[in-house]
Length: 580
Image (cartoon, rainbow, N blue to C red):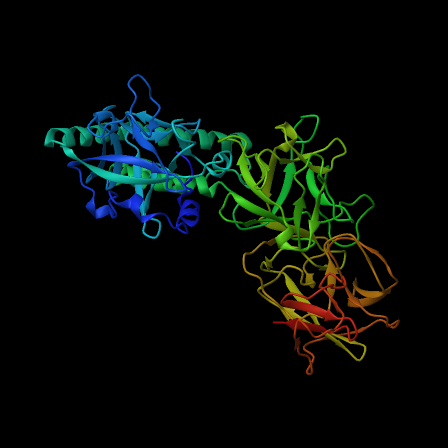
């Protein structure tokens, strides 16, 4: 049982146009398939060349394929595509072997006594079938070399011939008797308990993994509630429904939407809590984990807030790595010892394949999608680099960041900017500086939450840890403040500080700011006056992307090239503008 890559297969093969002559004997819809008929199944290459009929070779459990010397009248080359009313699904059964077909851990097509669900899908515009056996998409490595099951994206990319198109033709001289059909149905039913036992074993191992890891905030833990409920009432569900629930649990193990700290098993092999962070020059490195602190922090503070998101690229296992703090994507050349760094352009981002290190461990390897054997690893200097040999320092795990802890100061205040969308818990007041005009900073209260990269102010009890839950949907506010989630050199500015009687601004000269620092870019030497309430004349000016204005992003960095839609600071007026 593996995750289903059928969708990716359909995208690849659905666009193909293949010779019509090759389709003459091909059954072209599922409704034409019945339990009485025996079928011959032939694999078609991407060029339309026939690579051979699938058959059973006596004495071997591995399904074979040959383009000659196989008779359609031989039981070994005849298949039943059996629909089970009790299980509400199809099953692929070889008449010569007297067994069903599925895949094994070596990505081979093998015969088994246990019935495995078949999903036959006909591609109208290509004229061929895709055969998915229990989550394994059937294909051949090359002619006369035996069948291969492409179990996942990692396996599929290791084979140069990616054809997995089939024709299904009936056998005129062979119809199954009622006894034969009943025998297949009985085998499906007798294999049901074996399948149920397999799902129970999966749940037991997955729960043992949770117990061992103890903390469920790490990606890699399987969601088990659905399949556990089904196992408590197995008679209510078909094997197809069990398989679908299992596939959902497997897919749910992957890092989904959200924010993660990326950790690795560092050299020389001892397991540590090292975290991946970004140096000021944009290079990705691995350092000893520190609990993030916002705003003014002691020397040696980690250089950013290290929150990453995984952006799907062609499927849930293919991702781009996005650094929320800097708003950039990870990229790395696939040659050995190429350093990993961040880039503004998504098109330049390296696409990684999430390669689970073990079914019941939380570690993943980050494999390059465009290279056969390149992975991200950690060098002896704790730099992230490319490497083409499997080693322990390639094992990464994703710590789910469901909430961000911040601490108010002695007066109960904190101004900050975060690399994540957050909601506001009860008992916490919050504000944004909505506009700055005529030496005054207008401060408006906010209530629901705040989007990533939006500076804001909170107030609660003095010296209190506040847990801000991360959220999927941002809440946007007009703001005159900017900030940085990476350590950066910032020009003349004013920062909010607190006093026992409230908030005030403090003038700062150009210099380094720590991650999480919020400020207003201004050359004014007199501290801004704080006005609680909306500016009656405030609004966000909308401009075009080709306006020619000099712009800062919301982290105070000058924008080069054509800006994308979003909020910016007009460098001349220091006011917020919006590009639609």
